[in-house]
Image 1 (cartoon, rainbow over the protein chains, first blue to last red):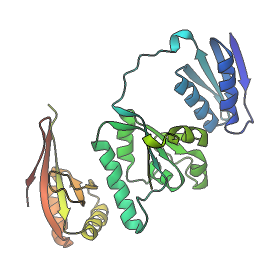
Image 2: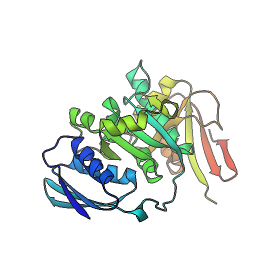
Image 3: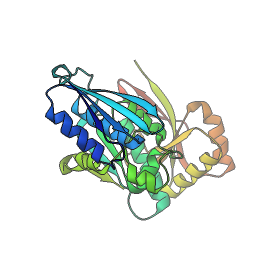
Image 4: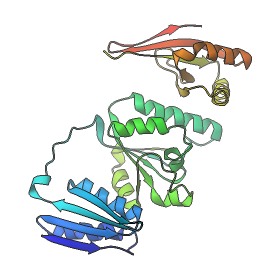
Length: 198
Length: 88
């Protein structure tokens, strides 16, 4: 069973919704979603990843990506090594400073906080960066080294695409991936497991 | 097993720590601003972590810039835990 979804020209999060709908409707098979931008490609890939399906991305040109997603009985249960993380614990960074008051102090506290994250296991499973927080994942950030270390240890790092766009940082992202509000909400919606720093 | 060693400078106040951070940044030293390790003190404070290889250079920078430090420590982390030795 093979199916092609043409999601070119569709605004975020439509390609994800279209793909999810098709994947839900089949028992097994391959779905190919065609999108025309990097963010949509990332989001569709992330969907496949979060559902545990194997996927492959073919870049057909500057503005065309084909994402092949295989849904199969065998791929439901994959044996991967579990990283040393608190399952489902998310830390949200709403700013590049920690707390309100002095900006100088706030910046240094944030550096020190993120360093501390690398020293205390288990790690959180996800770090979400939005609004001014996206400065921390982009070029010029003083915590890139720490964030890269966390990413290598299996911590998922996501930055809000709208925010990167707003601050003109889209091509300056140095760690983790771009995400949208749907994913951000999914990560933050459990208040018991979410910590907001900013 | 894996053993890690690094140097830590503690300061008399947060303001001196922030001053130290900006001076070391200008000097192009490989350092990190970190919370003061619990082996040194349990109080809330900021310290500067550095590579022990740079110890002499660090001491020079502190003297030249008259940075008001509290102490310089060596932190040794091993599988048995971690300990601090005062260097200065």
